[in-house]
Image 1 (tube, rainbow, N blue to C red):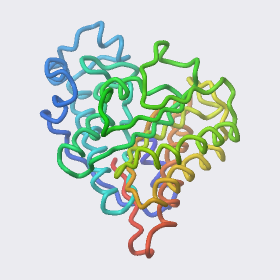
Image 2 (image 1 turned 90 degrees about the vertical axis):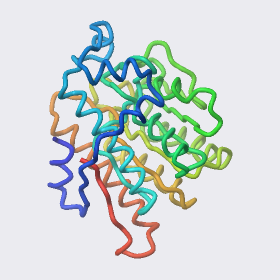
Image 3 (image 1 turned 180 degrees about the horizontal axis):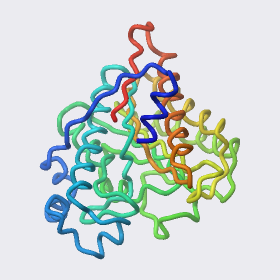
Image 4 (image 1 turned 135 degrees about the vertical axis):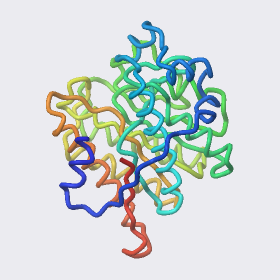
Length: 288
């Protein structure tokens, strides 16, 4: 995988973990059991596969079970170390009874629900900074007062019909580093203070980059690093654990996109290390 290869080549100290699959009953607690069964029996209807963007084969079913399990494992490691990353998932378009936009199951909604159900958290904040609105996550968590969804996204990008997040911040085409960071600074600290979460999930899409083929924003590589550092500092300065998932990133060169994701995770790990009590406590866990 391009992301893990880039992480290994970076020389940054990480601890790799291979996640177990997400238990089916946990998926069914958030998604329609009939749809979950369609995925695991490779009987997803053609119209749903078209909405997802690819055929749901047995290999895909096993992969998404493990990538969803990766976000759960990252959350558990973050509770121990302050921050951990899943090098996959961030599948924020998946809905109750179908996938969409290259997403099969919604790891963000499933893990938020499970953290609360298991007593690991009482209030979960989902910070979604993908260039596309997290419509699936917003729909699956709508009406809950213990899960808050914050989405900063390109206003005119996919999906055409947006769901209603707890707080949506639509951004104009071409928003640059300073404009993006200004919007984030106006909304993230206030959201944390008012909602008062005890756990944060971070969808760290790199498709806000100016060179992303599916994005409409104009962040530079340095702007991405500033974004990720800002998010982790805002969360960890309140001593809250945060787990990140991959999110979107698209381009003709998978290695270049993989490096963007890797740099994003390393920026988060470095920001977390700044709040660690000692170097020996600064484990940087990556699920891959």
